Length: 159
Image (cartoon, rainbow, N blue to C red; front, top):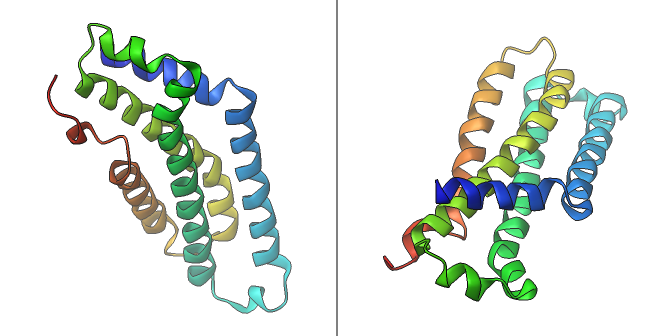
């Protein structure tokens, strides 16, 4: 229950704030430009659809990783900046629950980026046989990436 509250608080801060919302708009603009280039540029349009699909999947993964790193770093740095980290640590929530809540928010941010990227994947990979396989791989890889950077639940001592 406490983990859910922390996760909801982090998600509200990352989605409903202008800074968080701007990240999603920026991701959409970047993916729009990339899709446009892949489909209209004479050199890039010579690539087969599988290559274009995997190239845009690399950009989506990099964008998700960048956002995850920024939100992950802000998870605790933002608490220090706002002066709420001490209050969070002395609350009746243990450190593992705090980290799991913040990790859940990072995963939610990845899934928002993934959902935003789906239309672009369908446009770039239309009619290609690798489309569904690529989407499944992107979902799995993208979900594993936030687990590879802070906040790790296992990085804290039990407290």
